Amino acid sequence: MLSGIRNEPYLIINLIFAAAIMLIMAYSAIFSPEKDNYPVVCIHEKLTGEPCASCGLSHSFSLIVRGKISEALQWNLYGLRIFIFFAAQLAMRVVFSVIYMKNKDIRRQLISMDIAGSGIIFLIAFWPLVADLIARFH
Image (cartoon, rainbow, N blue to C red):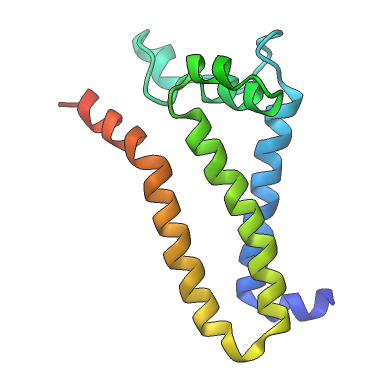
């Protein structure tokens, strides 16, 4: 099975994305807002003293993993929608990979649907954050 994956760039990319998302989820589960023991700090906030639009995402993700949604939204307004994006992407990586392996005749269409769907979900999830970042610099 693994030798078949080595010859399929689409499956390799899906595996890398799925692993990265699982690392994000693990990071969110391991580090807690209660202990405030996050190893990654906001460079912008350290340099300017001002929070940026993405400040609090680690706290927000950690709280979402723990089921504390309303608290998560207090840390970062965009946290839930971005977390849902990553959760959806993880599910899509698994589902699309299985369909890809089982249906050789629709692989091109599947990849096109994956790209289009992922792009749309990305825009829906990240546009408010991007718009906030743009507004802060104007």
